[in-house]
Image (tube, rainbow, N blue to C red; front, top):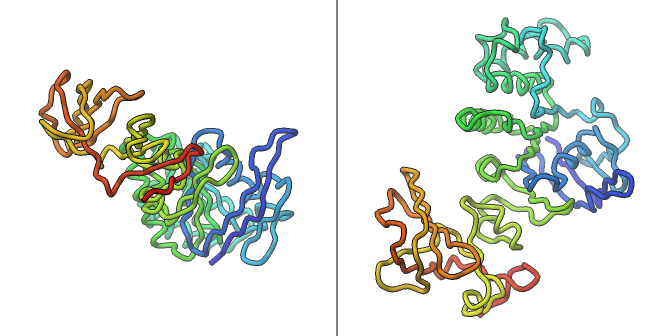
Length: 336
């Protein structure tokens, strides 16, 4: 198993700083997810770890060995890209075996590894097919299989599900979770902008913003104890409600944060009241958008199908134990 240490890592393109001094410890065998909005530097950070980009300053170490100057092939990593990057003229078997053949591996061992990976990913029936004969989800599993056969120390995923439709994303996400369980000695780093992927796959999540680390923690730690308004608003779906002015001042905060699932509706009494603008019925639950006079509508999540109608007056109360208070700097506010 491989531990990864980043110490004051920076990356600049000319005068533009993309990664602005990242300190991070990734434990051996851990599934770490880098998450953040587009342009926050998560893919660049992954490329620095892989060796596809040079580090401007700082050190990167695998276990106790500094790898700044090592090529990707010398680092013992395997990478799965968003675009699959399969050779169109090669069969699935040959795509998966290509790297091992290039390294002049034993033919019998190559065949064993490819079949084992194909069985793990349920693509054994497709080994004689060309990529064009496969669905997007099957192609991505081939790309993952090609990485598995190399038996890497570190497995890197760069937004591997972003080209798939919703149903295939869920299915392939499950395959990656099973892969992590079966390869528990391999350290995995996964980049995504989708916080649902991050929450469901990660041992720990590293939230990035503008080239710096905002917070690192388990999915539950980030959900329950966000250390900034940015993290609070990024983790959780639908996103956290933020209230300022009189709504926050009552609670001794500059900004009050309440998740949609932590608001209760009543017909005649509550902390706030307002008019229902829209009810989004999703079957299993409903999102109610309520105008209480704040800057943005309050979003309330309810189980099942809503009976309330647009225009109806509703009373809303937050669950006090689940309120988040933030000061003017956007950090958790002290409260009595």
